[in-house]
Amino acid sequence: MSTIVQKYGGTSVASIEKIRNVAKRVLEYHNQGIKVVVVLSAMAGQTDGLIQLAHEMTEQPDPRELDVLMATGEQLSVALFTMAIKSMGYDARSFLGFQVPIRTDDLHGRARIHDIETSGILKELDAGKIVAVAGFQGLDEKGNITTLGRGGSDTTAVALAAALRADLCEIFTDVEGVFTTDPNLCPKARKMDFISYDEMLEMASMGAKVLEIRSVEFAKKYSVPLHVRSTFTNGRGTMVIAETKDMERVLVSGVTYNKDEARVTITKVPDMPGIAAKIFHPIFRSGIVVDMIVQNTSSEDGRTDLTFTVPKTEFHKTMELVKDVARDIGAERVMGDENIAKVSIVGVGMRTHAGVAQRMFQTLAGENINIMMISTSEIKISCVIEEKYTELAVRELHKAFGLDDDQIQEES
Ligand code: ASP
Ligand code: MG
Image 1 (tube, rainbow, N blue to C red):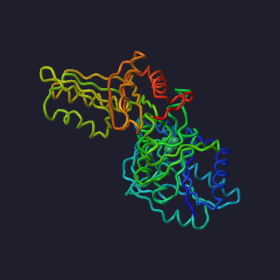
Image 2 (cartoon, helix red, strand yellow):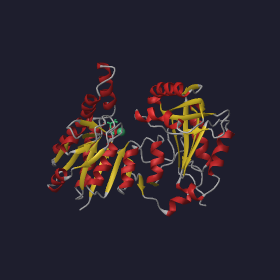
Image 3 (cartoon, rainbow, N blue to C red):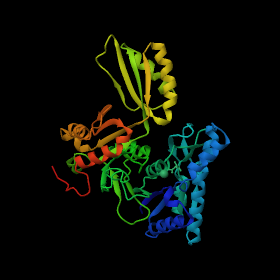
Image 4 (cartoon, helix red, strand yellow):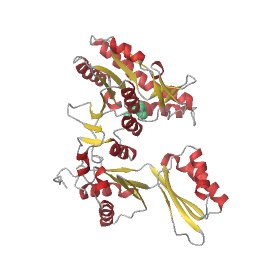
């Protein structure tokens, strides 16, 4: 007998009617003899609304209590869903994170899952019930409710699939699958049938909003096959799986962008051992994740410029921290820029094909777009550009790499 974990996102459960539809959909699987564990997000807009309430109460809500508040969104969804199933004459039971329990560390608002106790869920499944688990939430060692970070229900679903050794984890959302780029920005984006975990990781981390990145890390680590598909249609979505030989034939699989980062530059930094460690120490200690870092190698008069990017949400804090260090080490100036975007091309095919970077640079040059920073990995090339050129850059790169839906896919 197979086991499937299905996760339905906020738009899939946005109303009573929609929750009923999800229940019907789940019953189709159940009636085929499949054991179904359903992970639900909060109804669309709920989590935002709850956060807003908290901020109406106080400028800086207590992190523990904010988690208690945010976790109610998913509580609502699983309760209503379970009622729907029961009203249709079937048996189901809801679990909140702490009832499973899903154990996490104690980082409120961005907790990491440590382990999941499966016995309670398995018992209900064996009794023929449909199990509904609240996404996005867990329990720390001291018994506090934690949340996993925005979009965290995906991670709940994949982690559950891994823990239950489920045959498949299906992520039901409001789009048909993973696209070659953001269809809102580029009308010629195409749905992909398959994508490798690594490509998906690069896409997710750079703003492809379909899957939360941690869920993909989990899926890769535990080899959980993921099926990303639409709640509102019956079509096949995108399978996120381990890499196959076939995938390498395509040069670039997708184009992504990220407008959520800001740039910080420190000029005339003394060029000597230990300086980078000094500059980044307070930033890392504050838990701020630095993405790209560029430092000049040839320094004039023993001084060099250092530029890096951080999430926009951490920009002001980073500027403060960096200004302090800059003074300490005798650097010249700290400058910041929030109006930047990172556009990236992703593809496992890059490993075996040359000239991909050149084609990217030329495409941007052809549109007169200035490149401020470049970074590369084995399967990704990213350029930081002015934010206002994001759409243009994405569309042109999509075309330049033959991804437009009216272009014939050449096989090389
Ligand atoms: N409701 C949470 C959020 O909006 C978790 C999720 O939807 O995955 O971030
Ligand atoms: Mg979501």
